[in-house]
Image (cartoon, rainbow, N blue to C red; front, side):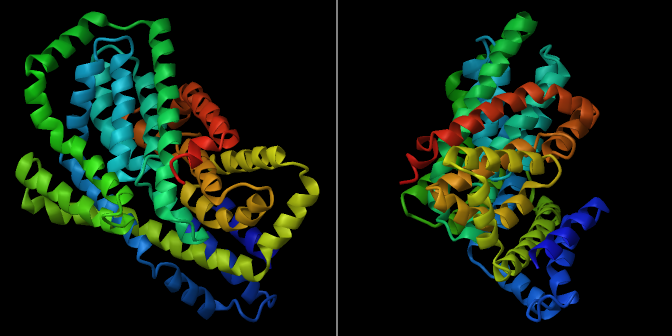
Length: 429
C-alpha cells in the first residue's frame, strides 16, 4: 500500500500535476488496485473532511487575512522606518534593518512568502536606491522572508501540530530562538558582504538624516501600533490570555482597527478585495491540508511509520546519523516540493523514528520547519525566489545562485539548531 501510494504520488508530481491532486491520486491508488478494501473514495473523502474539521486550522486563514490587511496597510514600512532610524548609520545597517523587519513582520503574518512579498516590495527599492546591488537585496529578502515560518505565530508549526498532536503554543515558543539565530547569521553575512563590496555612505547618511529629521518621538508615534502588533499577539498566547486560534482572531481585528482608523491606509471599500485575495491564497493550502491528512492516515493504516522505523533502525546506527539523514532528506525535498506537503506527509512518518532515537517531538518540529524555511529560497522551486524574482525582474535561477551564500548561512543555523536542542527546547518547556 505504501509503495503504491508513494509511486502514484511521485509519478503525478513528475507529470506536473498540482500537488493536492497528486496526493489524492496517491491516496486512492491502494483502493483502486485492490490492495485495500478500506481505502476507497468514500474513505478518502471522509478523512479529507475530518482532516480540516479542527479549531486549530482556523488560525491559518485568519493569520493570512491579518497579514494581507497589514501588507496593504503599510505596516511593514512603519516597522522598517524604526529599525532604519537606529541601524541606518552603522555598516550594513540598512540591509540589517530589512532582516529585522522580516523577523517582526513574520510575527504578524505567520507566512514566509507573505513576509518576503510585504517586506521585499517596500525595502528592495529603498536599498537599491541607496546603492546596494539588486541581486544581493533580493537574495537577502528571499531567505529572510522564510523567517516568517520560524518566528511565531507560524503556519508551518500549526500544520505540524495538526498531524502530530503536538502543542501549538510549545512549538511557537520553540521557534523564537532558532528564528533569531538565523536572522543574526543573515545579518552577519550582510555585514561582511558590505565590508567587501562597500556602501554609498553619503546616500545612506542622507536617508538616515531624513528619517531622523522627524524626531524619535514622532517616528515612535507613527510606528508604535505596528510594533505593538506582535507584542499583543505573542504576549496573549504565552500569558494564556488566549489560544493561538483566538490570537489569530485578535490579529485580524487589531489589524483592521489600526489600518482603518489609525493609519487610515485602507478604506472600507478595500475589504472585499482583501478578503478575496486571502481566500485565493488560503483555499489551495486548506485543500492541501485535507488531502495530506487523508494520505497520512492511509499510510498509518498500511503501518508505514512502523515499517520505515524498522528499516531506518536497521540502516542507521546512531542519533547523529539519523538527524543528518533527516536534514538531508528535507533539504533535498525542499528544492522541489512546497513545505506544507513535506510537513504534513513526513511528520507522522518521522515522529516514531525520532522518538526511538530520543529526539523530542518539539525539537523534531523545529528541525523540519527550519529545513522548510530554507526550501522557500532554494532553487529551482522556492516560493520566495519566485516572489523576489517578480519584484526585481531577476531570473529565478540567477537569483538562486546569488542566494547560495545566504542559504549556506541558513544551513549553518540549521545544523546548530539540530545538534543543540537547547535552541528549541529552552523556551518550550
